Image (cartoon, rainbow, N blue to C red; front, side, top):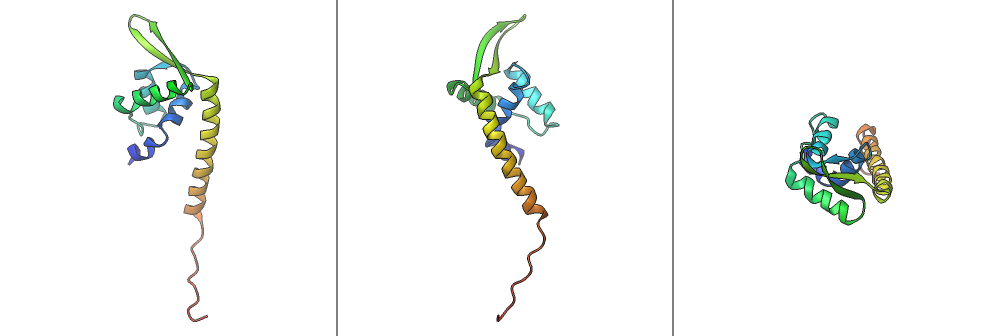
Length: 114
């Protein structure tokens, strides 16, 4: 079930994670897993295509670094920060709507024959 909910929100979650600091792919996946309490275990087959989409739109940038190993490190850009603000706001409005619906009082049955 988490995979289905993650699918439409992965790019926003990547941007939120990168807003806390640059990371290479494995570290990013680990940060998502840790921050979500293990709920988001993003497979490479989902993570890297999302990173490439974000890079193509200018929401993130990447560079190769050598820290004993050669790794591609991703960072959020101003375009990505603006995207994150928009998407996080829309998601919060959606979540608030879900919470309100779940907490709504029972509907009174319609009066028959009125």
